[in-house]
Image 1 (cartoon, rainbow, N blue to C red):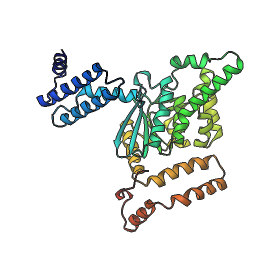
Image 2 (spheres, helix red, strand yellow; image 1 turned 120 degrees about the vertical axis):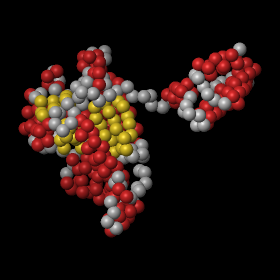
Image 3 (tube, rainbow, N blue to C red; image 1 turned 90 degrees about the horizontal axis):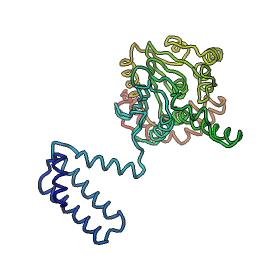
Image 4 (tube, rainbow, N blue to C red; image 1 turned 90 degrees about the vertical axis):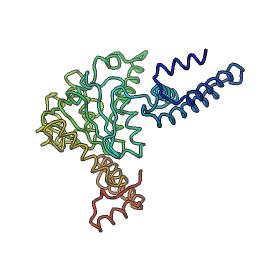
Length: 363
């Protein structure tokens, strides 16, 4: 019976393994079943070892064939990884690696204009915590899929959280609501806390929560057709996840911030550029993404010790006095100046070589 099942499975998968390899798999499966039937395998340990042996054989054989990794095996491995605690695939973000040390995070709900649903708020935190700890990532580029960057909060999806907070009385409702708001705030604060520079590329509309997001990024770019809107007063609330705190420090004009936040009017690309909200304008999305990735590549080619130290100290200086910032910088560099990156960079400068020619260790 077992041989029939295995033969049928191999036929359905159109597997082209050598016969000897198929025999190995059958033998291993038979041994596993006999162990279980005999009572030897009282838990999953033996079966797990057998699975690893089988999957190892499948992968090794596939390298010799022109079919690549056998997809059913790949699926099983992924399923086991998820069951073992690995991060499940994101539903609102698409992650790619377009260049060495550069990670592209794309808001990926184009059919919903990249509106921010409940999954988005969790996934952004998970994503940026992972990127912060990933030594292979030195720069992050954020963009939006589809027609626009983002339409902001997904009101239909988030209505229950906002309009029906849980709690037995006013105190408990308030406590739970405050905890929710703090959780949403962390979704964008995690971008700022990430030591890797984050370049955001905006096309089309950037509404509500989108402004919260981009003000937490380090460098902002946009297309000529982009526009920005602090939309919250139009839906009966004060922006509470970063815009009112970060936008005044980004553009420097309190009057302009009040204008935007109190009227919910649209700010178009030219005004965004002149006010300092964005640093560069591009004709279209294609040109913008090319420019964003080129910029990210330039940053990624520099010393990660220098780049990440620069970001961390710029964020610190924004929220502290000049004297406090200088003191923090001195404390920071008393250890960071002892890096080999400084010697390598100085040597390249003396030899009139580009920093891109230097190979820096991961950080």
